[in-house]
Image 1 (tube, rainbow, N blue to C red):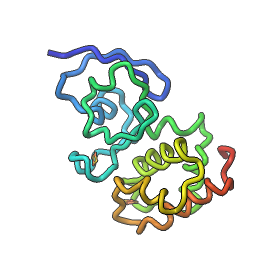
Image 2: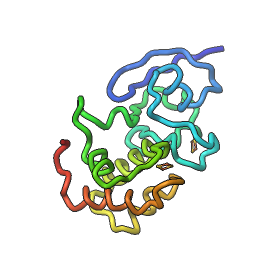
Image 3: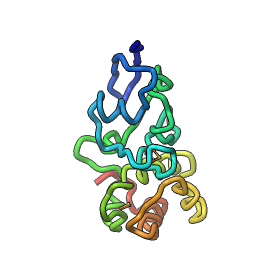
Image 4: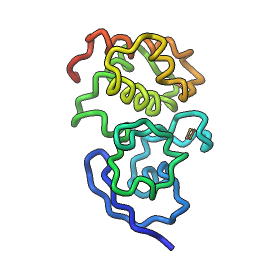
Length: 159
Ligand code: FES
Ligand code: FES
């Protein structure tokens, strides 16, 4: 039997009914309609499904949707303000920190959560911040360069 799920996604309130077995990633993509969050391994390994749940980066394939009841969720769609990209999004673009782009939403969410918690991470801490996210294309260096540019203050304002 479906149960009520009340939560906010990117600041917007939702009041929907979901099956208890539904994962957060499924509800975000299929019911809320935000397909920026990717579903890769579905087993908590690749990080493509990473979103922020009450400010913490979580793999939304490992969270039941009903666990988000009353919570604030931020997805990659919530990073930009209108058509202004977040500093990290802009830095990812400028530094070519993506190729196929499948990992990019998860990389952005993990990096955003890292910088919210620690605005001046060391390179090692940056690597640890995305160590739950797999990228098959970039070799990670361009991603670290993008995060470094934000940490250095090169992207203070969304552009
Ligand atoms: S789809 Fe969630 S970690 Fe891979
Ligand atoms: S850009 Fe293709 S998996 Fe990361």
